[in-house]
Image (cartoon, rainbow, N blue to C red; front, side, top):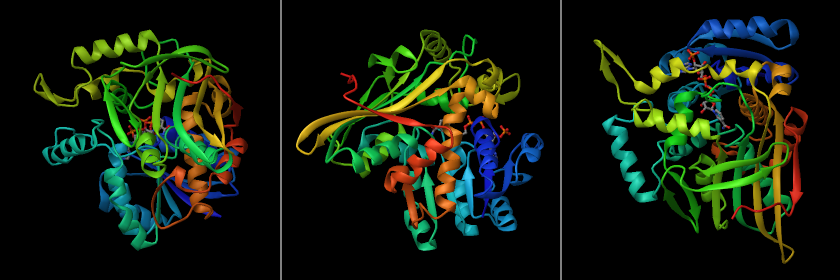
Length: 419
Ligand code: NDP
């Protein structure tokens, strides 16, 4: 029925590719195109005898708009799924526009070089105007709204778990459970243990930038920014148990804040173990999280990229990670004149994911929604000209697909609230 071009072949991409191959009725043909083509070929080799989906591969540098436009035109897919890095979001959107194809991704744009003066000037103005200082924000991709609308193309942004599923949960809560939502707390708990003193569950550079940045939340339409890791709560998660969690800035706060302005407060919490935090603080203190190149023995290196080369590849954590994740949203508000609160969440088991697709649960909980988002677009269930986040479409078919494709969810009334 559809042909999908998938860009990137890392931890998340490998799950999305496996799930597309399980869903051959929709994805009759896929092309895996990435910087290191040997990874694409290895995935093809692993999957081609297990699926009816026809798999092709290609080498591509997605920073090169002309080369990517040519690849898209030659392969002529129904859509492009970007599961490379957020650095490539804008070049891939440009190539999709040039080739006339729909676009889907899992994370919003941030620049690789945060010292670029042109980017920095816009960033600093945004920090001042809006009041949050994360390197990533939606403004860059929302600026493509008219281009996609005029071209009659759909761009679906952020269809991972968080952002992605969490925003679908918000749309679902609004549609079926509330007349008014007052607060949203997004909780991301990883109770998994990979046995290493320190490793990240997805791309280390993106992960460490996100976690070491100041936290922020939205209250009455305004951003409140706090020092990194300065708000900590303990929460007892179904399937995992008690964990410490910390308030972080996160993408969906920005999108939900814009699209559901009636919500009075939106926060995001993520769990971290003490070992992770101690390592991260130490690495930050010695300058290893810096994105500014330094000269070392006559060679220019970017400290955080060097660190990435030392850390375990997130795609290799699958066999050794045990435990579960619990990710969801607590909503409070009013239904039929009465106060109501619910928690919508998914529990995912690292080893079950590994048995099914050879990946740990963080890649799995991102790669499955990436496939589902692509399916929503190519089947026309979520198709509108313009640039959208996942809270802006009918949540029902997506929620149904989560149950079918490995991320079943549940709704609990009157959960323990986060103070
Ligand atoms: P990885 O680092 O494991 O994989 C990234 C892949 O992109 C690699 O295959 C890499 O190639 C490829 N790539 C990088 N640069 C280019 C380029 N210029 N051209 C072509 N290919 C390129 O990352 P993850 O799989 O962990 O993460 C993928 C995405 O998922 C990220 O954007 C991340 O932010 C997002 N994410 C979203 C989550 C959510 O819930 N919404 C949660 C977790 C991640 P090479 O093999 O050569 O390095």
